[in-house]
Length: 349
Length: 289
Image 1: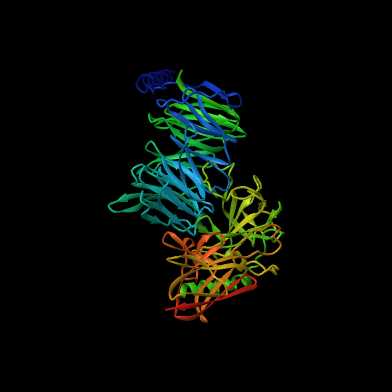
Image 2 (image 1 turned 90 degrees about the vertical axis):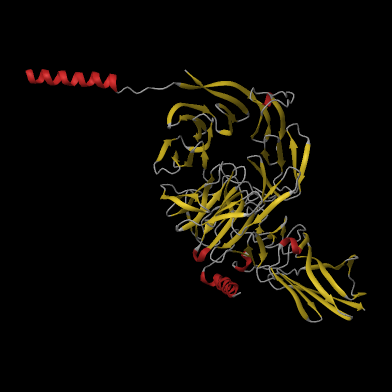
């Protein structure tokens, strides 16, 4: 009896010590809060201001620009698709012959005399050829800086301020500098089917990553050491993408789309972590302050998850309707669903 | 050169090794391989004028697909909705402009008679058709799909509309008999293939062009394949000619430079389609000293 009492006493003491000596902070609690919703079918235009930061959007056949406060300054019907930059946009047909760049008030700035499909990435203008096997870069006066043609289709693309990384259907990647010079080419280890499904380029161009092949599908990470790139990580994934998938270096991590999950790793470390998501991944955004926003779509609804470094979920919400447009400015999130634009802020409870 | 020879041999025996068939029932070609596509050679043939099922040219496994409304990370291009099958022998076939939502993604391996999708107008297309491209991954070349597919009837020979001579002083349209100073000159040809069963005028490129000067072959262009040379694409077995060297406009081609020697110069140009229907134009230029 005495023994049992003593044992109970020891257990209680250990529990009390554990509670006081090993506490773990729960952290701040967050929630997503809608700030405004704009119905584009009833929208009225506001005046353009040089001081404002405007965000381009396309919802269905309508595109335009709005301010962080939801003032819509430009609305138009897209001919087929649009390429929207911070200060210019292209509205192009399904078979564009001549690409016209306009400012946010719709005034013509310059034109690109090329049949192809414009893409604005990191404020750089690229034109993808009609059959997907050529790419060119253009300046803001409509002059071609360089042009490359390939036998293989371009399947994935990532860009930083200086360089461009292309992934190809033939299973290779190519790193190209701002003058169009090929810096590095790589073909990953053998898979039964060769193709690149995603590629990513770090901000300083010292790390390249790609997901390639089927049977097996493989994640390969290369790091620049001295004058060339060397494989620092090569692992077989549990995915079997046969389409372009998402992978990007964001805020110190490499984010890689998984099967109903988003995976991430710190470059140089082997551990690959995973956050479960709801259905198909649509986008990952970063607020430049340690928080990541993951957008996914499931059964026609939008799921928004906020995760905080070191990667635990701090908020989640479900919004009715499939996401058509996703953007952010730091912790302010903009979503386009149907013909409605909305701003959602992440707030502390 | 040896590599190219092997590639040609490989291409010639491929139809016998694997049973290739047309991907759609309506075998109407509306654009040909190698014709001008913007600033580049077209990498495939466009087939069909109405909505219909698309089947693989031979059995194969889907190795890549892209749907414009359901691929948030896809790269824009004129291909629209497309899928790519990998076949035996290192061949891949690309089927583009498919109808929205029609790509059958529930399976990865397609037998000969399985339906991949439906012809559509997605991407750079105005009428329901598909653009079929065939890539030979072993030799890193794009092949003219007609080299693989069973032949279809075509009674219409290519049309040579006009022959021009380009010199420093300008471009002159040639008659049967002409006279000009001896020296270098560029031959420019206005030529198209009307094809068969095309309900509207859609000038396509011929399959082969031959230029003879005084009976000597000066240029032979065959639209049978494309290869990559660093960051450019050129016609296989055709002096590695590139699109911007050849095409002035969609149906205007620069066949390159010839030497007009003093006296009569007989210039013979033959344009052939894939089935061998051909048209020949002969002009004579009296070159003066």
